[in-house]
Length: 419
Ligand SMILES: Cc1ncc(COP(=O)(O)O)c(C=O)c1O
Image 1: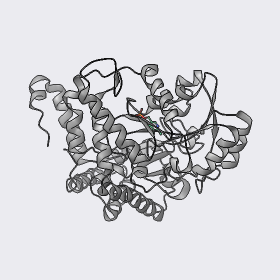
Image 2: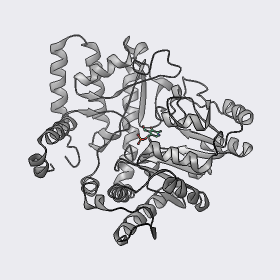
Image 3: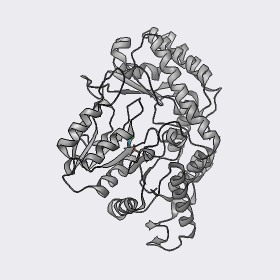
Image 4: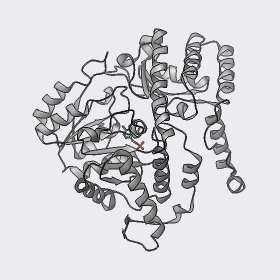
């Protein structure tokens, strides 16, 4: 367990919050599909003196002196990222996933250009053109959806029709709430017909692509992949833009800096390099494969209980459950109930949801974090049991309290790395 003596002495309020959060992470089950636990090596790197250095520019071309170690750090991060994802260029400087996407749009588009992406209620992300984001003032976003919500297959015919009509400059495959695998080759063929770039936002599934258990969009000729590094990829909080070819990568570099960001966060870039090194090891492949085994196993257990999963299952790390149809409760109520027993997940819109985002019909949950903790199929059964028991006992305060005690006892058997 890390020791925070200096922090304790200097700022007891923040120290207490940190210790409280550490306890929460150890005693609770993390099912939010975008969360994970970093390794001790990644954590050490993030809290290092690299924070003290300004390194505007890129390796070998910086605006400040004293860069011999920073160049080494960023070059290693780039080399490992390009090896891991089989591409020619990586920009490892985006501060997070959202800035990576915005910088990418500005690298490839002119104001007024069109992007064709997944409908937001069918699993697209805010940065793929939600009206509340500023990028919609600059670029035009049009949509495709799933063809059939029962299977989750994307509607490639509709995608082609919209592409022929709207002439997008980018066709975007990328999702924060979509449990199925994508046919990137079909998307690439449509993009080629209309002369669009192909971009995949693999933020959620990067770990499984790195581990070789989900398809790498570059293998089907995609031009660009954007991602976060902190979800299934299990690195520090951050973003990255990968380009299949060097020439596009140069445009991306200019857009990230000086187009969009200032100084890179070097301790995070170093921690990305460490995480990419970990992702190249054989045990990471096992972890990635186990994420999907766990997710499919849990999905089957819920479906056996009669619960309604959107698309009737999963191909990746994630499940979306219709709480209204399954348990006659809202996603918000389900999220609160599971919180009460120490199981954290999030309320989520289901496709074409008629309810509001803050009180939607579904929940979204997934297996990367619990897989990092060493849990396998038997533990998936136990967790499903805890959750179904909570549903059965809702309203019975003492039953919910004793279920929470059982969850804590269960969790403490699975140590959280670095804590
Ligand atoms: C598909 C997708 N893209 C981008 C992002 C944005 O990442 P960040 O929260 O790091 O800005 C997310 C985060 O949830 C995501 O799911």
